[in-house]
Length: 376
Ligand SMILES: *Cc1c(COP(=O)(O)O)cnc(C)c1O
Image (cartoon, rainbow, N blue to C red):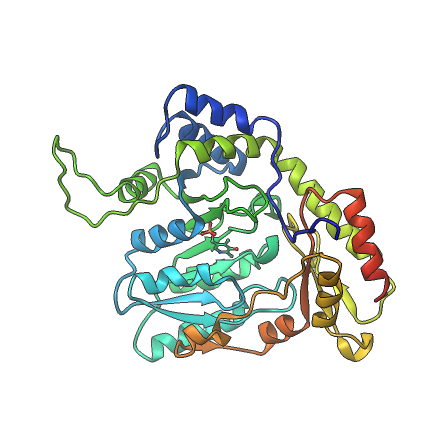
């Protein structure tokens, strides 16, 4: 059997090990140290727009801290994109709050601005104004930034921008990760760059970044002994992982162009296939890092289902995967309120994520093309 081709696997550059070795040589084997600071600066420089970045142990931890800093607590409601990975929604529940899910629109697959407006009005009518909105740039595709912001601002509700999949994506030339009141990034093993596990919170001010770091390092008050006035967390990124991150930031532009090339290749393969569409930007305002390349299969036109294609790829040891199953369809969230329009459910049922790593080789592509060739 040939080697497994993964959906999205880690792809190291040349300097990661140097930074990690330096951490060993200087014995900075801790959740602080020079790599952590330098990694944060590299992300801040990359994002621009005077943002303040705190490197954390995961994107999920970053979301949790964002909600804490926005004052989300027991009994509150938080609006959340339904079409996403569960980590977007779980931190709402960590805070004892209730997620209220909002369905997608067709062009970016992300939160529908009209439905968001409807949801906010209805929640207010039912007696509670939502505390925050978690909007996601799914698969690297920016959400409808201006429309969502307009709705959020009109009602005075902050946006937590889940940019876990969208580092390097832009809307009208501005970086994803700079739009929300807070934004989060992920450096999990499957993301466009990785620290093995890690994430970051993008905060609007230095003081709020410092507050996040304080909470992320067990909330120790200023005192020689251990003194606590707040509940703390152990959410800081280690200096070892941050060393990997510094090296990865150096190759990020290359990784984006490699992932985008994957998307173009799939577009070429399926160009003349009726019933298959490759997910890409609706217009020039949007620039996706194409973290994962996804297709939609209309089985009435193609005569095959996404699952049939998935199994054919699997038979050749090639990984592919259905899209994120919407949160309002998840057993764990079955009792959560949801504002739906059928779009995320339709996209989910027709969708498949194809191998999208920046490290796919020419031989990998040959194998992928042979299987896809049976379907085009
Ligand atoms: C990966 C991911 C997260 C969580 O990031 P971790 O670093 O894995 O905790 C959150 N939201 C989305 C949309 C993601 O894809």
